[in-house]
Amino acid sequence: MSTLQHYIRDIKDFPKPGILFKDITPLLQDAEAINICLKALVSLVGNQSIDKVVGMESRGFFFGTLLAQSLNAGFVPARKAGKLPFHKLSQTYRLEYGENTLEIHKDAITKGDRVLIHDDVLATGGTAEAVCNLVKQLGGQIVQCNFIMQLTSLNGKDKLKHHTVKSVLNY
Ligand code: AMP
Image 1 (cartoon, rainbow, N blue to C red):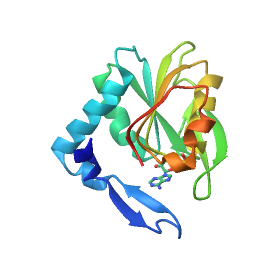
Image 2: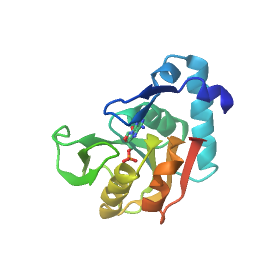
Image 3: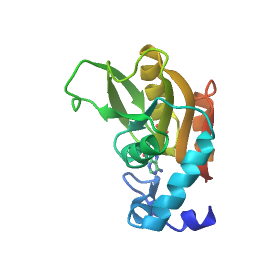
């Protein structure tokens, strides 16, 4: 996975002073890096069956849809407030920087669906926790929360302690 690390660019003080932003756009620009990353994410799931992959807006959409296709599952976007057009559930939570609200369509998860939660970065865990809550309210069974990378010093795993948390890279 050391190869993959070369494609993650650190941007100091973005979007606020004190934040070291992990930029995945170099990874997205390279076909081989996409393949390596996707294979690694799929292998985190192993042979567990998945009905839906839920990806967080917006950087969870890139590999979320690729994961869904690889796992023969559907893809569900968890979107920022006001973006989804149909009946939805909302959850507001704190971020490493600021506050956010995510929404999910009520008909996106069927009771008993086996769900993989995916995002690019696990930081404080608030985003993933909020999405887990939305999925659980709709009766989904969370199989795994999976990330390209975890910022381990921010202890995001603690907020997800009832779930299996996996990532390709740890910082
Ligand atoms: P958190 O809720 O604190 O775990 O933050 C996770 C969400 O914020 C993810 O959607 C990430 O894309 C984004 N995020 C948080 N911290 C960073 C960071 N240092 N670099 C890049 N993205 C981040």
